[in-house]
Amino acid sequence: MKLNRVIVPFLMVLMGATSAFAEPEVSPSERVRRNVVVRVEPNAASQPIGALSPGDSASVVGDASGWHQVRLSDGRIGFVSKAWTIIRSGPEPLIDTGALKLHVIDVGTGLAVFVEGPSFTMLYDGGSQDDLADGPDNRILNYIQAVRPGLQTIDHLILSHPHKDHLELLPDIFDRFMIRNVWDSGAVNRTRGYCRFLKKVAAEPGVQYHNAIATGGMHRVVFTGRTCSGEVVLPQAAMMTASPVALGPGGTMSILYRDATKHHDPNENSVVIRLDYAGRRILIAGDAEGGARKTPSQPAEANSVEGKLIACCAGDLRSDVLVVGHHGSMTSSRQEFLDKVQASTFIISSGPHPYSKVVLPDAAIEDELRARGGLFQTDLADEDCAASEAKIGPDNDESPGGCDNVIVTVSSTGQIATGYFRGAD
Image (cartoon, rainbow, N blue to C red):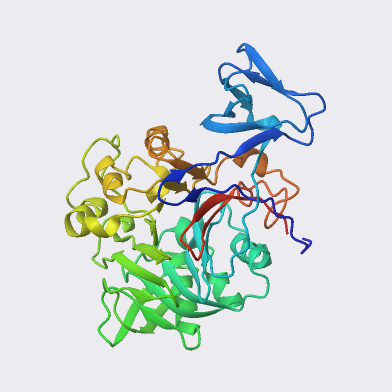
């Protein structure tokens, strides 16, 4: 892989006293020689209403399986094939050395959120179900190298919960960076991935390990798996609490939900955090759920993470940006939860690997979020991405990861810009 960076500038969504959403634009891909037909409905047999020639563009206003819904320059709405188009972005924002940037990395079916502030760095989760190349091909390592070449230290590493699609790529992070603080609920899942993760934490010089059950003593976990086993002993640093954690000038992290109680599903232990910077708030929900699969209009179950958050601290949920819970599943994002959050920008990290035979996100959740504001997704071009010759990490690797990375920038004056990073390394 070459190290020269190719960065596609991202569109800006500027939020001042009111919110104004700039729409991403779609253009014919490089392989189009004549034009791409715009059709009334999202199928090849539908009536044509126009065409995009190479160099033309149209605003993206919606999404259907295999198709972008677009608005033409004359206001008409139609559909273009994703296979023959690419999403391009608008003007690049001005450089602000005091800005906070949040990167939702395209890791296929999973979640990895890299945050860089003026005086700190953070990684929230790092796993995948289908994009599992490790070592020098680790997609997260390649992404951080592309956007922050020369970075040596990650100040805060948060594991929301010990599931493969949130942790499997994290062990390599310890081999590449100095990790200062690890935040983990303390709920144990005796899998190979979690065993490898905790062993890396235990071996990291000077690391501070925080969980929700800290006693000031040792956290001991015994693994008996065939590929990773033995006792892991971790000295416990300060316990996770509701008190904000300072992230340097003007920035804090609030841990809104932390629970180390043994549950049948580790999703119920998902650590939910809110980042505050320059008067703006970003809520990262991990796999926090509202209960069983139901439409968003149904109330959150009282014993669910969303239900507990609504009951205990609804005022703390209010945020400008939401990294959506559980990859856009109908197990999460109940309307009453979203009403408390009040976000106007939403990001879903998902991919083609099914969860209990369901490929996420659910259309009902996409529709609900689009009705509330701007929706950004890491799965826009998964099929084409697998064969792409220019993406972050290994190219043409039959993996969906590496193409549709989402960046949120909060300027030092509190303006928010959200868009896509489509680069190659």
